[in-house]
Amino acid sequence: MDPDELMFLGEDDYDDGGEDLGRGMRIYRPRRGTVRHSRRVAARRVAQALKQPLPGVSRVAPRKFGMGLGTVQFVNGGATTLTLSADPQKPFKAQRLMLDVARTGATATGLVTITRFQIGVNSQRINTKAWPVAAFAGDSVDTLLALDPVEPGVNVELDITVSAAPGVGETIDVGGMLIGLTLS
Image (cartoon, rainbow, N blue to C red):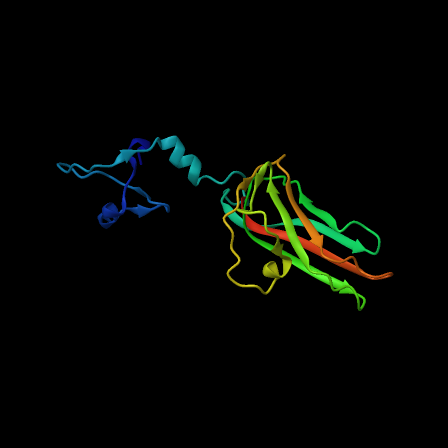
């Protein structure tokens, strides 16, 4: 087939029986005497999009991944605000924040909240009030967020605060991760 015959067609052009290439692209051979309103795509771009980068390696496409934020531990006499952070190695668009709290000891009962959530220099909160960490537990529902995209070299930081430090020999551990899309 001549590469000049490859065209990008809209959904209204799918009844011509052409070969489906996915994402609205089809191999199309124009019929004599018919005029279609479609825009041409350079044959090299179409061929490159269909070609695998290396044998056995799939094409680059968005996939869902997790990005760990690490863990922090509140101890008796320690700081009451600690920071979870990440430095991504790929572009990332987070959709869900998940946080887990583990308490050891009878008096480790302080309220754990998020007091700052930054992606680069942009705050991901719309007011100054703290968010309860329990809202982002692993079994919570309807907690999808529309967060700013993250690029390599841009830090993600969450300040986690406990309302009362744990007693002697007791701890409050907080771990977190973001789940979202990246190209892979």
